[in-house]
Image 1 (cartoon, rainbow, N blue to C red):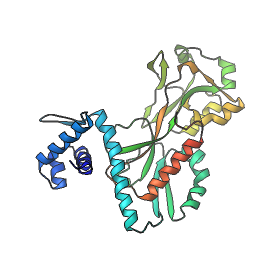
Image 2: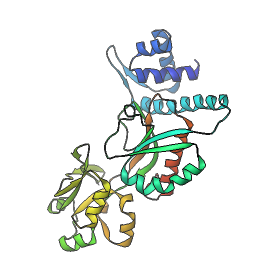
Image 3: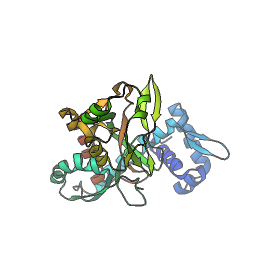
Image 4: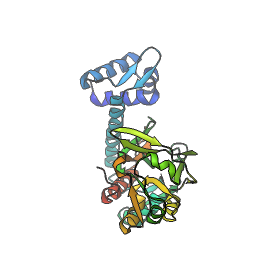
Length: 301
């Protein structure tokens, strides 16, 4: 069995959703596809696809293998393209979508260095709190939080987000500091709205994930407004630690309920599956990964 052929066949089956469509796309017979996938699973010693006469589903191991395999195939394709093109410098436009706060605090201050390294690459930033469809809106890369559920996307983990619960020193002096999750219901809460829904506050209680209603007298879909509301003493917030690093250090705000802090969430650089990744996009993702590695509140681990 040719390993690369089997990898390409597996990727095509996952993306097309069927053995028959993958066979047509690859111009081979359906039995050939079935044999390649069976041999691949036997070699790996695990099931990649769960199938019966009606359905085809990717197993968790299959999803991990798909993401890794897609990256390998893309790197191989572009290695060949670079040689064929005489190793020309990256050029063209990179379109990225990310949150306004992340862009302002971390990307813009370092963008001049990226442009100096790659002067022929232009960058367009779509700063928005909404969930942008990369394919429909022609985006090259998005920064997303958490594990992906969409197999049409490929994620590279570039950092971790730490959620904290906090309030201004003034608010806590006036209203007291809650010591338990139940006491949160007696306090003003600053809610964060995403995709039209108020995001629940996640906590870890003896290894169990517990969600508390994140609604309150004030809510917003913008992270910087959450920060402003906290500093104005409007109430307690549950948000990303990187948004408050400076005011935590100065003592203007204070963390509370630290013993219930939830696990970190992965920060991903997300691209559309099945697309060849231009070198300009790959270099920009490396740039984003370097940003997270430099920031204590963003780095993995």
